[in-house]
Image 1 (cartoon, rainbow, N blue to C red):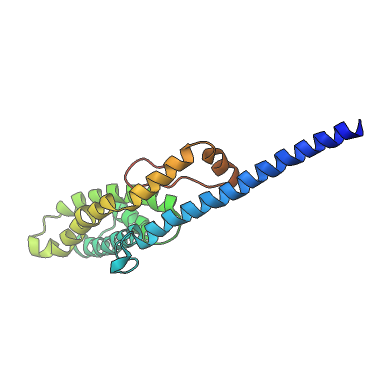
Image 2 (cartoon, rainbow, N blue to C red; image 1 turned 90 degrees about the vertical axis):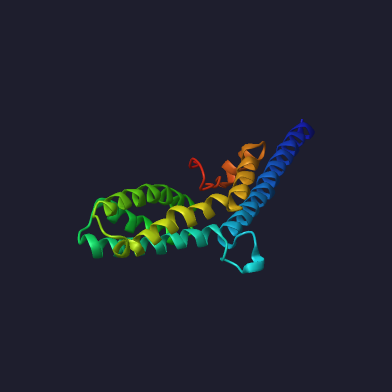
Length: 192
C-alpha cells in the first residue's frame, strides 16, 4: 500500500513540476516577446537613423507637440475655451507621456475626433489664411503627417504577430495565467 501511495505522490509531483515549468518558462518567453514589441513601439524598426526617430512613441509625441500649437493658436484667435479644446489639451498629455500603451491608444482615438471638432470650430472663426497658417499647419501635421506615419509604422505588424501568438494554444492559457496582455495596434479596435 505504501508503494502505491508513494507512486501517486510522485505522479502528482511530476505533473505539478511540469505545469510549473511550462507556466514559468512560457510566461517568461511571452513577457520577453512582449518586451521586444514594446521596443519596436519605443525605438522603431529602423535603428540606423537613431533610436526614437521613427517610432510609434515619437509619432505620438509629435502629435502632442502639434496639439500644443493648435491649442495656443485657437486660444489666441478665438479667445475662448471649448469642450473640444479642453479635450485636445488633456488627451495630448496622455498621448505624449507614459508607458501605458492602452491609455495612449484610447487617448489617440479620442484625440483624432476632438482635433477634427476643433478644426471645424476654428474654421468657423472666418480668419484669413495668414492668420490661420500656424493652426492649419499643425492640424495638417497631425491629421496627414503623423497619422499617416502611425498607420504605416512597423509596430502594427509586430503587435499583430504577438497578438496572434497569444491567441494560440497553449500561449493563450499561459498568457492568462501569467498576466501577459495583448497589445493595441493603433490602427484598429482596442484589445482587451
